[in-house]
Image (cartoon, rainbow, N blue to C red; front, side, top):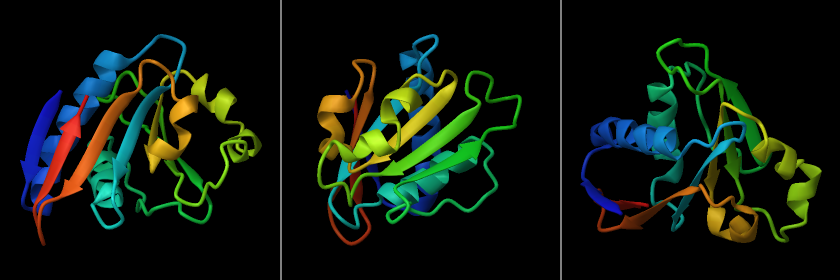
Length: 150
């Protein structure tokens, strides 16, 4: 388990590098790699995702897919060697786990060389694979956040 205290948005870039490294280590050949992100409303889940997408050289603006639930981005850079796409899921509006069938979640989990980042992942806990990396964000004040990764 690793705990990091972030006081400025600029510090998220270093955190994103750390998370990408952990995801690379957790990678299982032939399956998607999952980052389960939890934290209160306004904790910084989407802000983290924006910094993370930059580390993957995704130039498209990353916003929370709250209403569309899921958004996919291609990773074209050769220096991100092991991953080809990023799927960003916001489970905030998911009321029942069966709603993930419509999104073909099981098939998405089988997409090799893919990173799946799930905001509000606690709603999908029973669907997450064993090799999931978990990140929790706690609000510690107006600008300070504590990120726990395991």
